[in-house]
Amino acid sequence: MITSREDLNYYLNEDLKRFDNKKPTLKDRIVKNESYFIYHYIKRLRYVEYHKNKDGFIHKLLYLYNFIIYKRLCFNLKIDIKPGNCGPGLRIMHLGSLIRIKRNCNIGKNLTLLPGVVIGNKHLYGSENECVSIGDNCYIGLGAKIFGAVNIGNNVTIGANAVVTKDIPDNAIVGGIPARIIKFK
Image (cartoon, rainbow, N blue to C red; front, side, top):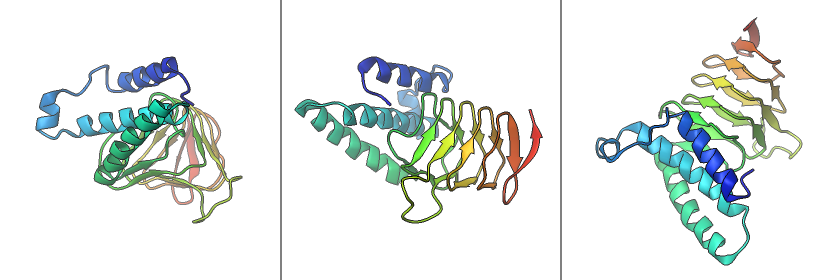
C-alpha cells in the first residue's frame, strides 16, 4: 500500500526497472508505441493509489484528476487493474485482449502479465473472504484465468490459457484446464 511519498517513489522506481530504466519518449508517443501507454497507465495507477490513501483537500482533488485519466486509460487500453492490488514492479508485456484484476487480490512484487489475464473471484458478487494471493516474481501467460480463493507461491509461471482454481506451491510451472503442476523449477 502506498501511503507516503517515499513509498510512491519506490513503487515508481521498481516499475521503471521493469522497463529497463528507460522512460518512454516523445517519439514513442508520436508513433503510438504501446510501451508509452503501458508505462503511463501504471504510473497513473500508482498516483491513484497514493492520493487515495492521503487526507486533505488537495489530495482529494489530485485523486479525482488522476482517477479520471486512469479510467480513460482503462477504457482505451482494455486494462482494468483495481488500485491497491499489485506490489512494486508490475509489468504488462503487451496490449491486446482485456486484462482484469478484481478488488480482492493481494499480489506481490515483480508480476508479469500478458494479454487476456483475468484474476478474481468466481462469482459476479463474490464474498470478501475470497481473496487471490499471488507471491513475488510470478509470470502469468496469455489468456490465463485465476478464480476463487487461491494462494499462488513465489516464482510461479502460469502457462497460456490455464485456468487456476487451486493453490500452487512455490517454484512451479503450471498449465492446462484446470491448471496442474507440469514441473518444478
